[in-house]
View 1: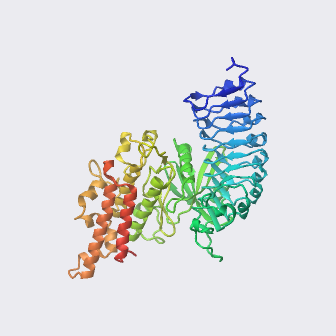
View 2: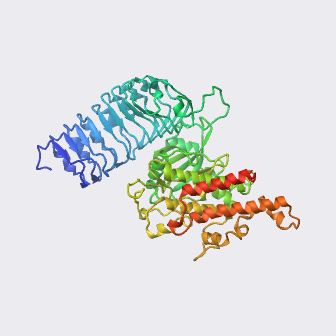
View 3: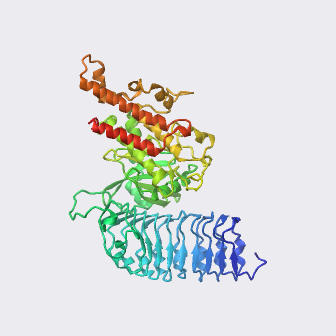
Amino acid sequence: MENFPNLEIIWLSGNHFSGLIPPEIGRLPKLYEVYMETNSLTGNVPSSVGNLSRLTNLHLEDNNLQGNIPSTLSQCPNLVNLTLGGNNLTGIISQELIHLSSSYVYLDLSRNHLIGFLPMEVGQLINLEHFDVSGNLLSGEIPPSLGSCKTIHYLDLQENFFQGTIPSDLSSLRGIETLSLARNNLSGTIPKFLENFPFLQSLNLSYNNLEGMVPMEGIFRNATATSVQGNTKLCGGIPEFQLPKCEFRHSSKRGLSLTLKLVSYQNLLKATDGFSSANLIGMGSFGSVYKGLLDQCETTIAIKVLNLDRHGAAKSFIAECEALKNIRHRNLVKVLSACSGFDYRGSDFKALIYEFMVNGSLEEWLHPAQTSIDTNQRPRSLTFSQRLNIAIDVAMALDYLHHQCHVPIVHCDLKPSNVLLDNDMIGHVGDFGLARFLPRTLEDGFGNQSSSIGVKGTIGYTPPEYGMGHEVWPQGDVYSYGILLLEMFTGKRPTGDMFGGSSNLYNFVKAALPEQVLDIVDPVLIQEKGEGEMSGNQHLTEASTRIRMKVEESLVSILGVGVACSADMPGERLDITDAMAEMCRIRNKLRADKMLD
């Protein structure tokens, strides 16, 4: 590049260029426009771009760039348009990048892995018209200083971990046309000032924790232009929103606060009493889970601390953040915040903060002898009804991940220890550290993504085709679900001592169906339904015989679903939607016969 000292514009957009951006680019003193977007460029954005004092446009979006955003960009006083979206950039949005350069008109940092807070200095971007940081891992509150960006037309903060309320300072953005705050952890009510924005054409507040009455004027009169779905505590609004009527009464029930400010290492240290072993509630492949308590609101939380010395732990942290920020479902574990910083030794520290599940994991309930369940406070095992309900909860979670998300997600590590139970014994699928996104394609419905990049799952629950290099796909989760279902109703682990060689849980159950089903199910279920007494009673009543037959019939059907999902040949497996429908049909029939508690 030194041979072109008078070069003013580089225009290489939309090609298949790969490799690095040469650091020599900083030796082109007259360069003022760079267009390298939509290529396959890798490596870092060279810090030498800070030498380009005339630079007005830098477009690097939709490449494979990584590393931090160079703070030297703040040395480009004329930089008007900066687009870095759709890369693999990490680190924070530095204060230097923002407050030393107020010239930005168009700033796009979306679809990366940026962490930390959005700097308060963003309010100094008085010329900003388009601002997009969506699809990152940003946390904390939305800076009220954004209200100073009065020329802004487009503001997209969706798909992050922003918390707290929508700042009232944003009421000054009266020229805004598009506003998206969707898929965060925002709470509080919807500000009425949004009704008064005369140019607002698109408003997306979906999938937060907003509550109270939905306004009815301005853009809120247009259900096509406004989205408020996924906020379960909203009420009122126009009929098209299909929300319940508002009931203006105070509730004494204290709910979980989702306006967490617990994002620093110091606060997590305090919440867990110095990560005391007394608060250790679980160990996973990439870290430890602690129970913590927030002093301000006496809210119990679960904190997953990543062991960054383990290979793949940092990648697992990003994968879990990426998955959990995009999904909201009753049967998925809810992530409340993320923490990324340094511990007291100056070492990297990463943690995820979840809603605490008071009844622990399904693993603890299925195999209490091998766990630390307090049997004085919990029953020794799950009832038939509880197992059936939890199995349906898990199926609904997988159906949502596979078929209802904008981008299909494969969990890749479904097993009893990753199914958590809340106070009402509702199942929640968690631990998305191995999750994979499967972009849809026109040809086959899903894009390919090889499992050879480290997706192993857990022995006993991983489908056989993954061991032969097959790409990750939804049918892999279906196999895991089938094994989980067989384990739940037989009480036998897929890795138990009785299985080895050609013998496995699938063959064990399949060989027993349908005649010997009562011989292989968890004995606790037989005792629960009175079968222990019936088997020794020579004077069975007609009613008890009918109960026995219906219990046996339902167990055959449930285990049949498990077998149909866990077949070695993927083509023989059910789709999770069909499995879920069949499990619901079994439950509905039992309820109609008054066989469920």
